[in-house]
Length: 234
View 1 (cartoon, rainbow, N blue to C red):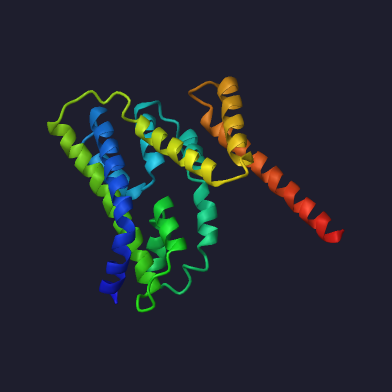
View 2: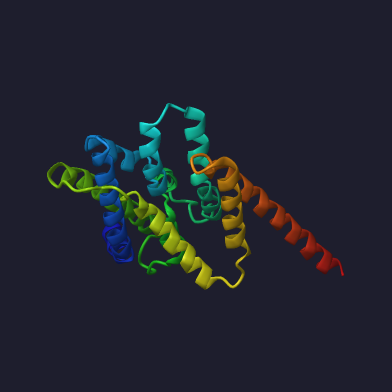
């Protein structure tokens, strides 16, 4: 049962492995260039397991200690997982002890595979989801650790390497823009970010921008619900 689930999960994670190894190595190189030992990216990639937040954490570790700012920043950066979790409640039913790890190890890529891919009939779905999640985490931790180890022997100017995460989100944004006909959400995000950048500056605009986005999306959702109810009544 486990072997079949592993064999079914592996092909779906190979494309993710390529991206995770590259991004993880970039993160490992970045951590090493800032003076951290290999154990920092190794354990941070294992316990945090949130690529965007790990890149942000590099600057948090090097700046003044601000626990509340770090907490709310982590909450806002990963707030999308709240919605991921709600949508996976049914899929995580009756999976036994694996449920705890599936919740802990869920990332964007694991969510996409586990949510959209239907394993073969002879494969246990709970083990399939488990191996998808496990393999993705192994790729990320391996990439981060390898990057940090190579940072000891390969010396080069790492200036700008942290931009790799920005580039990733830029590509994701463009893909979503091309796939969606309604660009209101994207334009709302850009508008909120630009407004908060002007008001709060480049060093402190992220949290206010995310709070403003959530408020705008919540207001827009309630407006749509009222319009839907009005149409149903009419």
